[in-house]
Image (cartoon, rainbow, N blue to C red):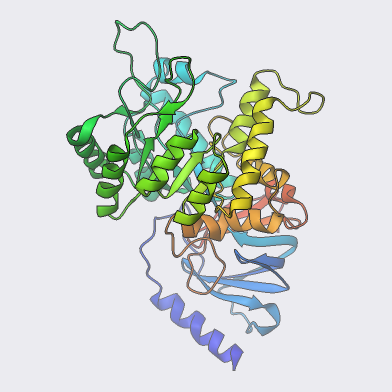
Length: 432
C-alpha cells in the first residue's frame, strides 16, 4: 500500500506542483531519488532514509525500503558516505561587504564604487550558495543604498546564481550615531539611513518597505557615547513606532543591540531578533526568552576581528572580548533564548558561513541543536514555512555533505551537492 501511494504521489506531484518560487540555474528534474547514508530532517537524524524530489518539492522522505521501482525518467543518486539535510539558512549576512582584513569597513563605504560593491556581491552570492546556504537574511547594504533589491531580483530571475534573499536595504540609525565619521564640517556618506522623531521615522520606515525591504533593521544602540562606548540610540517611543509600522505591513524588525538597555528597549518594542547582544545580562536574556525574541550572537565576526588585530588562536590566551562573548552566550543558553544562526558574514569571507556554527558548538550548544538552528530553527524564526525541513510538501532546498555533521560539524565544509527549489545548482565534478 505504501508503494502504491508513493507512486500516485509522485505522478500527481509531477503534474500539479506549482508553488511560486524563484527560477534556478537548471530546470528541476522530473524525478530525483536521493539515497544518502542518513538524513537530518531539521529536527533529528535518520539512518537509511531516501528523499524523492519532483519539480520543486519533496514528495517523499522516509525509509529507503519503502520506495517504489523507479522509471527511466528518474535520476537516482547513490550517495554513500553522506548526510542529506535542508539547505542552510544564514541569519546575518552582508553580501555587499568583504573581509575587513582586505579593506576596512570605512574604506569600503567611502571609497569603493557602487558598481564594484555590486560586482563583489555577485561573487559573494555564488560562493554562499556553493557552500550550502540556500537562504540568507542580508541585514543592510552598509552604504550601498538599495543595491540588495537588485541583487535579490537578479537571483530570483535566474540572472545570477545565489541564495534566496531576505533583505533589509539601508537600515535605520539615529543622526550622529553611525559611521563613517571624520571632519565634522563635511557631510560624509553613511552606512545606514539616519531617521529621527515620529514623522521622520514613519516616513523612512515606510519608504524602505516600499522600496523592497523584507525586514526593517534598526540600530538600537551604537558606539556614540562620550568616551566611544556603546549607548542606546532610539527612544522607547521611537522603537515602538518602527515595530508598529513594520508589523502592520506583515514584516519583522531586527535590532542591532550590544548594550543591556538597548536590548531591553528593543525587546519591549517587539523586535523579532537581536543581533550581537554582547552586553546582555541574565535579566535581559530572561526578558528575551519571555517575549520570544531570538539572539543572533555573531560569534564568528568578533572572532575574526580579534584575529585581524593580531590574536593567534592557537598560541595566545583568549582576549577579554572573546571571554565576555563566551560568558554572554552561556547566559543566553541558560535563559532559554532561541539562538539564530547568523555570523555577520562579510566581516569574514562569504562561503565560510559554517565558521559560525562551529563556534556555536564550541561555546556550548550541542551539534544537534546547532544543525537545528541552521535549518528548521531559522526557518521558524523568519516565518519561512516551506523551508528548513526535509518533509513531504516542503520546498526542495537540500544539501548533501560528506560525513556526519552530528558527529563532526566539519562535514558541513564538505558540500558535495546543493539543490535549490528542486534544481541541482552545484554538484562536485568527482561526485557520481
